[in-house]
Image 1 (cartoon, rainbow, N blue to C red):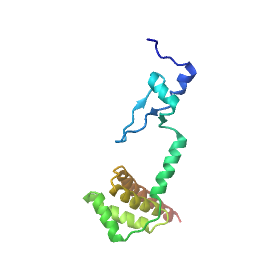
Image 2: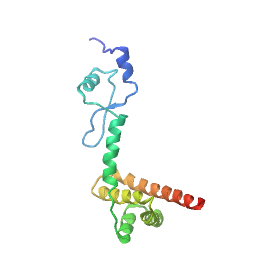
Image 3: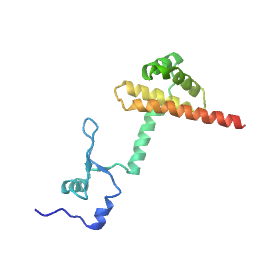
Length: 155
């Protein structure tokens, strides 16, 4: 059996890439090594593999994500309290609720409020990965409010 070999320049081109097979139904992907394995190289030639660090694809994914999370949606404060109580643990609830109320009334941090509400709606439909975005929205709102307060103090 003949050993699989690639030309040096082509082999080097794979060193900067992290290539993955398409995700299965659970979202898991296998890593491919087309510089070492013939079947991975054949899959790459057929266009089956995707580069994890492809900037063009990352921009498209980011654009899709922002389209889901950025639509303006305002809910009553009582409903916001229900969302916060349902999602956050007990010791964070009151501070998270007050942060989102302040973000809702802020010009700079309102986007974090929208992100939380939209991510919560998607999270409730069964996509658990959006739970992380709910937490990130809280962190983002706190950071933006801190920044806004420091700018006010300077004036």
